[in-house]
Image (cartoon, rainbow, N blue to C red; front, side, top):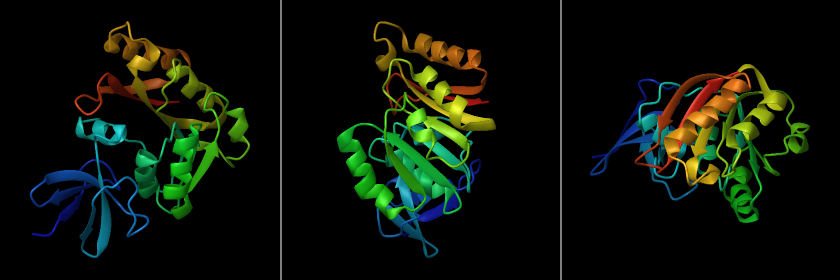
Length: 231
């Protein structure tokens, strides 16, 4: 039986692929047909190709499967991605925003940025990599032509919320959205993760954001949460 793909009932440009012997998995429409990014399965449905979106490899996919209400990333948007690593989640965001949108990727680790550029950005014209420290937005802000619709932050830094807010001050448009993947162990291994999640949400509130939602990412990511907010 061939794979069947249908639109996600809540989120535009996100799909549900029913795979034989595996079941239903999230997917995005492949912007670069014939190429995958991290070994994900490619499926064809009605002459269109989709990439299966692995929730154990992508915190955004994990948040969707855990029932998050808000996914503010849509077609034609400009997204700033802090901590892009080798491009797993950024590539799916690239699929979602499509050729009318753009994903600006900030990554500092040399091995990750090499994989991001060679395996992903070279083949996707709607992605731009920056080899920079996300704590210093002034270094790359000059190369982003206008303020972005969404900032997605997934960095293993002690001050994750502050880092995101500092970037938003320079680069996020009015009424724009933020998505923060909080890694509790990078902030304080001695504290309960739930306490850390609330602490980071509190920092964002003090910086002027309205927190729309906070969701735990277990079992896909231990001691992680996703915070969604709006400027």
